[in-house]
Image 1 (cartoon, rainbow, N blue to C red):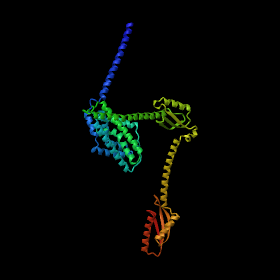
Image 2: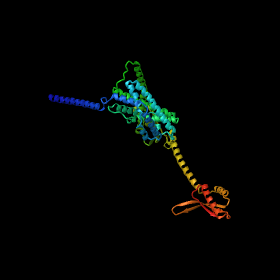
Image 3: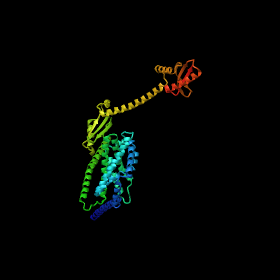
Image 4: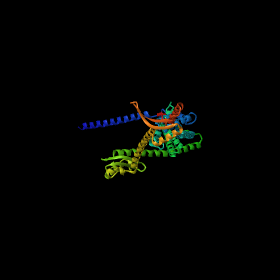
Length: 477
């Protein structure tokens, strides 16, 4: 019996060892597979990559003209709020060269390339802003479109586009036998072109806040693109540039690297801050939609303020008890991103007076919407009334206007003895029309030739005087 138990224990132990060995084997194979799948070191051409990046740094000749034309196209797209046009401009934009050059030169300690990158970066920014300013200065459309407003402040999406766009571009450039075309710069152009165009819009229209916000967004994105290039070059082991017997140049390179890192640190801090703000906003919306619910009450509006750490909810209907609100606050405290935040519920004490007791902001918003809609309705009615009065004035002959007309007619045509006016309503049984009709009695002493000339002249004068194409004149002698 004991031998049997020992045999079973040994078998179980052996089975467990086999399972562990199989798991280790699977893990090794998975690691090998992923390594082969994602490893780009063997297929990296470092020397060709450095040459390609250095070649794209310069901004003159063809590159300068391509940049000018693409900025014009992007400005038009932003001006009319057309995303498709902005994307079209990105397809031809050569913006990435100097910025990628900055990141690579810092990584390989190349002072000359770093200087040339900064010079051409300045040229690129100046030429882009000047082109956009000229366009928006002469453009008749001065409205603040959503596409323009979206480029006046940095968001986490802009930063992520800059990071992954920069990574995609430099990884593509490092592949053997491949030269990255302008198409690979589309993601980078997404982060760079619209902000530069928005700077030009702000300068052309004296909206300095637009220019400052857009140039700040451009700077942040440019730093992260350069940072992405720096990281990839370091990870792929790009060789450092060596200077024979030149301590001064090495020191300059070290200073440049230190300055670049110092500039990158605030950008990384901003990225973390933007990420936290984005998470706060999304968690606040999720919390309100899933937790802030009460029978007989309805949420009209909610706002979340990351700086003040407050979430304001405006509700109407049955009054939510304080105990329920306290429960909501406790649940909110369990969410990591919403800890130390305050939940503020705005509600009425009496259901019949809920609307009157909403916050001033909410009431003013509702009244503003009603006012705007009423103004639009009234303006439309005014236009229709003016049109009807204008049409009616062509056919009505009130005493004063007819009196003035008759006096003018007598002054111009002294042989008129009497004049009458009426509206003649006619129909062909398909359409009804109202024709202004004048009855004119002429001096009986006029000869027939003189009478005909006077009648023809009078009819032409009446059409011009009353601005009518159709009228009827009956002549009596």
